[in-house]
Amino acid sequence: MVCVVGTPGACVKEGWEAMKVRRSLRSLKSKPGAQVVRRRGSVFVINKKDARFKARQG
Image 1 (spheres, rainbow, N blue to C red):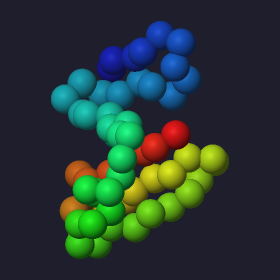
Image 2 (image 1 turned 90 degrees about the horizontal axis):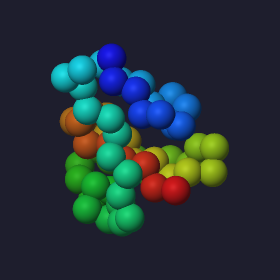
Image 3 (image 1 turned 60 degrees about the vertical axis):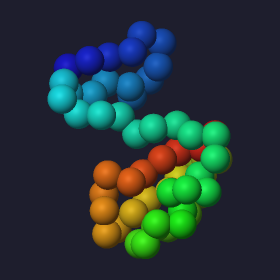
Image 4 (image 1 turned 90 degrees about the vertical axis):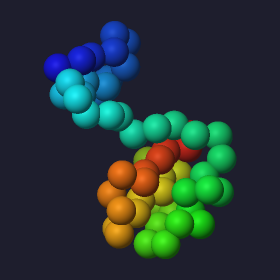
């Protein structure tokens, strides 16, 4: 397990990749199956068709 010091909830299993933080979500929200969701003051893009396309902004 890999943890980032000073970041709550930033522990991930080795071999897994954390969700990427992007400045612009335009490229991901244009993919088929993408949904833009606002949760806890952040904007997320989740994709039901291809789960590896996900991102957070803010």
